[in-house]
Image (cartoon, rainbow, N blue to C red):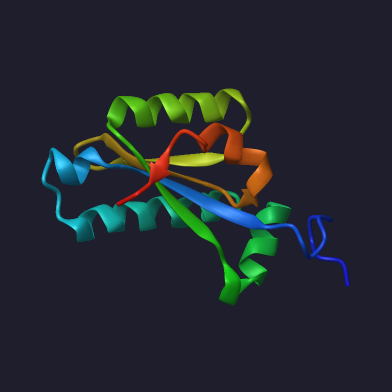
Length: 127
């Protein structure tokens, strides 16, 4: 049986989330607050691209969803990544914490790993 999106069952869909590591290391945000930011961004990206075939396929795999959480060193690098993604047509949500209006993280809609990995390959796993 074919899956939506036409990629076949071997295609790995991944939702990438990129979080500012300086929120914890330099700004002393509680880890729970940082995790909340990532959750907001991931949920918003799925909501904004809900009707996208890759998003629908990803959601259909409820018990085997795959997310990767990466770190950006600071707000400038996160904003630069967001600009690069936008310039290349990569759908994502840059999460802005309110009322401070600061970028804390971003989340891509679910994509085949090979499609977006070149834009993220220099980033490390969040720790």
